[in-house]
View 1 (cartoon, rainbow, N blue to C red):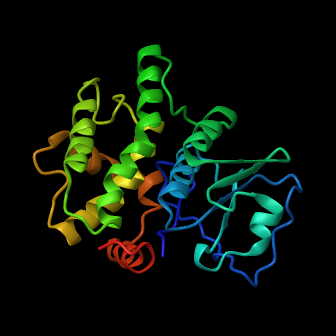
View 2: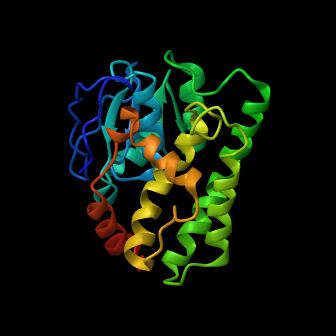
Length: 245
């Protein structure tokens, strides 16, 4: 399963991860004042919120609750989050969801290193990148789900990211420094790099040096690497449950 997560972006101390809760599990004491982040260890969307939590050093303030999506407990939808998806965040007697909205909420409402810069141009660019993340995900996943070859849309989406990484040249990330924009993409890139390599013999970084450097630098950030799964586990999961081929 997932690697253990640590208490900050720079610490090597490992967090003991709770077991995933399935259909026979009892719910936590919902709305008792505890802040809880509901995730699935292998979901790329939940991983975005998990990375954000870790980078801001919120392990002691935001309890992880892992949900088994293959054996989902009924209470999760009934008592916690009516949409039934992950991630969701139980905070101040409310529940927040949708990963791209949630990472912004966590950054804005909790202490820790800021994940958006003060610079207005960079903030606007971050908003544009985050808004495009769903379309990027669809472009990369659609041919895999349809058992189709690498499409022009896939190439164009990857080329767009490669080009966007040149807008600010003060670091290896989208905005120069690490930000929510990077979190929005890295968990998707983690998976499609594996899938396209194994299933299409296609290297998403070939001819894209900025993307290659981005992935290399992301793998130096513990807040992210602490949340990664074994690549072959992700490939097997995708083939068996997403039916990609």
